[in-house]
Length: 41
Image 1 (cartoon, one colour):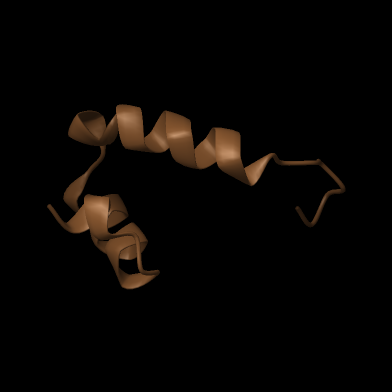
Image 2 (cartoon, rainbow, N blue to C red):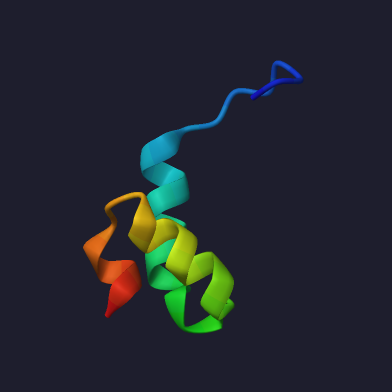
C-alpha cells in the first residue's frame, strides 16, 4: 500500500469472497471489472 502497509492478497480475496453478500453493488462491480468472476455472480 502507499503508506507501506503490507497486505496479503490471498487473505484479502478469501475474506472478501466469503463476505461478498455484504458488499455494496459498487464494490462488487469494481471487483468484477478486475476479473473476479465470483463478484459478478
